[in-house]
Length: 266
Image 1 (cartoon, rainbow, N blue to C red):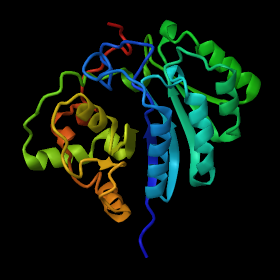
Image 2 (cartoon, rainbow, N blue to C red):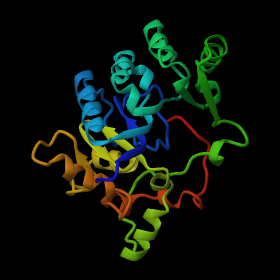
Image 3 (spheres, one colour):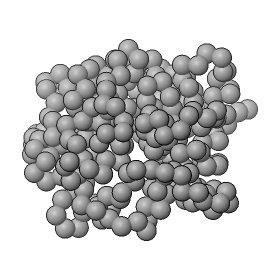
């Protein structure tokens, strides 16, 4: 009997539009990656495709860009309810700059205790932070603040992964570093515009055109020529060896890289 395929973290990216323009944006939204919305119907189709491949998802995450600037985000939360018995928790990641309107609030409340809003708190930039805290206090929504301003920043601040280039690591060194990458250790898969990647860096480095697509580096969710079993096999191999993006990515050295103040604006 085939072993169940479980996603620890499945991040759905409906938009690369953002309310900020951060100098050290980890998703390269400071220029190299085009800011755009994925049509609602396409995002729903990708969610369907993911749940056709995974037997279970622990964290179903919605990330951007900034998800609360995505016009159809309330509808997207409602759509994900069809898989309510297939995932443990919804995680919404936000920079705390935009507070949802009434339809968005209702879609959040519909998940009860099974939803967390994770706010990267950038101090004065996160102008809607207090509204989220009030929402939490009054309606019982789980809100987690990650402090990214002043002293003692979360994770000691940001790392600089911008201007990626081939780091020309020997193959054995690359493999060891890729397996110990924080993104790999937390199994942080990202789904964007019909493609499922092992991490956000694989996703956005391909999106910025840093290198041509390579077979089995990601799953093309809209490719009808590959069977479900083949696609599941690619996913099972995601963290077993380095991908092309790993050659260009400094994030695998995150533990030792210098830290920078978060969210400095361009």
